[in-house]
Length: 353
Ligand SMILES: CCC(=O)SCCNC(=O)CCNC(=O)[C@H](O)C(C)(C)COP(=O)(O)OP(=O)(O)OC[C@H]1O[C@@H](n2cnc3c(N)ncnc32)[C@H](O)[C@@H]1OP(=O)(O)O
Ligand SMILES: O=CC(=O)O
Ligand SMILES: [Mg+2]
Image (tube, rainbow, N blue to C red; front, side, top):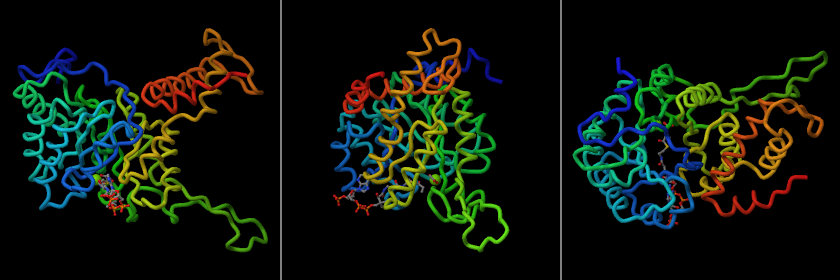
C-alpha cells in the first residue's frame, strides 16, 4: 500500500515533486501528426496557436520500419519548435512493444523539458501506470528535468475499462483518459469495423401499432460508445483528471464527426482527437460553449445572487444545483477566452437582457 505521504513524493532521487493538481489547460483538439512524415512535420510550426494540443504519434499508424525515423523526427520538432500557448504531447508505443523503451529513453533526455504529456496506449491496469511513473521519475532525475511529465492513458481494452478507477488513481501524473474505440472494439470482439462513430445496425425501433406498414416504423440509431464514455467521465471527475473522446476515422463525414464530438462534450469530455486538419475546427467549435449557453449561464448566475434559493427565469425553475451547472459553463468559457481571441470577443459581446 502506498500512503498519502508517499503518493506525493518523487519516485527517484532528484526527480521533480509530483503535481498536487492537474492544471485545466484547454485541450479541445489533440491533433495527431506523424513526426516521420515530412509533409505533416513541415506543417507543425504553422499549426502552433491554431490548436490546443499537438501530439507527435509514434504508435499505431506509424509503420514498423519507420518507428525510429518518427522518434527522431519528434526529437527534432521538440528541439526546434517554440510551442507557445500550444501543448506538446506524444503517444509512445505500447508497453509490450519492442519500441517503447527506446521511445522513453530517447525522448525524455532530449525533449522532456518540452513535453507536457505522454499518452500511453492500451493501458490495462494500475501496474502499467506504476511502471511508467517510476521510469519517468528515473529519466527526469537523470536529465535534470524540473517539471513532471504528465501521463494520459488510452482506454482500449476490456481489462482497461474494467480497471478504470484504479488506472485514474495510480499516479499523481495522471492527466486524463481517451477512448480508443478501434482497439477497444477489437479487444471486446464488437462487430463494428469502423474507427469510432455510430453504426446503422445499433438502433431501437418504434413499437408496432395496428395497421402499420413495415418500413414506416421509425428507428433511432444509438451511440455505441455511450457506456464507456460515461464511465470515463465519472472516473475522471472523481480523480480530478480529464476525459476525451478519441479518434473519428471517417474524415470526410464532418457532420457525423461533429455529432460524435458533441455527444462527448455534453457528457463531460473536454476534447477529442483530430486525425486530419479538418477535424481541428470541428473540435474547437464543439468543445467551446456556445454564445447562447454562456449567455444563459450568466443570466442564471446573475439572477441567483448568492447562489442559494430558487428563482423563475423564462418559465423555468433555477436553484443552487442549476447555478452550479451554469458555473461549469462560465468557467470553461473564461478559460477558453483567455487563449482564444475570437471566443473572447464573442463572449465579451454578450449582453444580459
Ligand atoms: C484508429 C486508432 C488510432 O490510433 S487513430 C490515431 C492514429 N492515426 C493517425 O495519427 C492518422 C493521422 N492522419 C493521417 O495519417 C492522415 O491525415 C490520413 C488520414 C492518412 C489522410 O492523409 P492524406 O490522404 O494525406 O490527407 P489529405 O490529402 O486530405 O491531406 C491534405 C494535406 O494535409 C496534410 N495532413 C493530413 N493529415 C495531417 C495531419 N494529421 N497533420 C498535419 N498535416 C496533415 C497532408 O500531408 C496534406 O498535405 P499537402 O497539402 O499535400 O502538403
Ligand atoms: O488508439 C485508438 C483506437 O481507437 O484504437
Ligand atoms: Mg489504439
